[in-house]
Amino acid sequence: MLITGATLADGRVRDVRIGDDGRIDAVAEGLGADAGERVLEARGRHLLPGAVDVHVHFREPGGSHKETWTSGSKSAAAGGVTTVVDQPNTSPPTVDGDAFDGKAALAADSLVDYGINGGVTPDWDPESLFERPLFALGEVFLADSTGDMGIDGDLFADALDAAAARDVPVTVHAEDATLFDESALDGDLGGSGTAATADAWSAYRTADAEIAAVERALAAAADRDARVHVAHTSTPEAVDAVVEAREDGAGESDGDGAGTDAAPRVTCEVTPHHLYLSRERARSLGTFGRMNPPLRSESRREALFARLAEGDVDVVATDHAPHTVEEKRTGLVDAPSGVPGVETLYPLLLESVRKGELSLERVRDVVAANPAETFGLDRKGRVAEGRDADLVLVDTADPREIEAAALHSAPAWTPFEGLRGVFPEVTLVRGEVVYERDPATGAASFGDPVGRNVRES
Image (cartoon, rainbow, N blue to C red):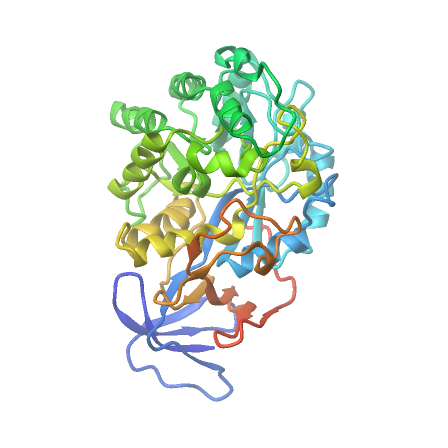
């Protein structure tokens, strides 16, 4: 394929040639079409690297009524995500070699490339797990969430030691359950749409519980020289703790995805729901806005977004965690935590670019270049010669309203209903078209499952 006249994230207008091996052969001006090449005219549109979403829950095995690798990867492709990393809290949990193999067989249905993380429980089997093509260790839960995989400090230390010995990164879900405020759950919390419900969950899983757990996790990692990635930081204070850890010598990142000799030792991610939603929005979401860690105050949301714009946040990942409408409609105590989001990652951030809140290069870095660098994916994350042709074509001047009915995740709901986003027209994985949308009619089509394990390819 030859893509002509595309505007890259840095503003250069270039042609991009894709070879038979699915890699980018050339990024240059004035490339002529070879015989048999498909030519994709991209004039007036941006060509971006496919997003690397390092935090999804595609629910298989054990939760296919919530999501499958087929439905989840279609949603990813439609949102411009070309690599996903699945977390271990499935049923069975991915804590040994056999469980990894079972999940890998299901992942063969993926339209996009993928990684599979391994989990930690008291009965995990690190020897068989590390024999597999593991993406990372984690999400290591320092407090219970979906799947009840919370572990204590001693087991966390053991997991860090095991990962550090193999130079495998560890993704940490950092909350301290001893700092949860049980009194916030007193009273009638059975409904799904009340303001009391929305505020109660945020008051229960306190900001202090996250901040304290992040600080302890970073200290434990520094003692062992382990590579740690802090998942879904919901507070600016937690981001600041990561920045301070880097400044203290726990790890350095160049911050712009340009590439370094070694992956950074300490990084953090934030999610779109913590960037764009707050407790004010949660009052209308009710239990559909319940997630771990929960939504924070509007002032904290604004400060977190400022950290993103200023360059302190390494990665934006979705924590895509779908549940059915029926499950979320139960009362606060019974409703599961988590929201879908893989399809709206790029669109929400690109709308912030359109509104002048973020630069396009910053968005490229946090969704593609930085996660690829952080986790050692040398062929992902950039539009450059020799990289995989994981590419997204978008018209950044053409936003549309986010509607659950137009999305492709199985649960058919979104916490971002009514917000605006800039959605892809074409998504390619290693040069293969996996998603294409007609801008005039909105009609969408999907390609075949071409996903590969990024630790094997």
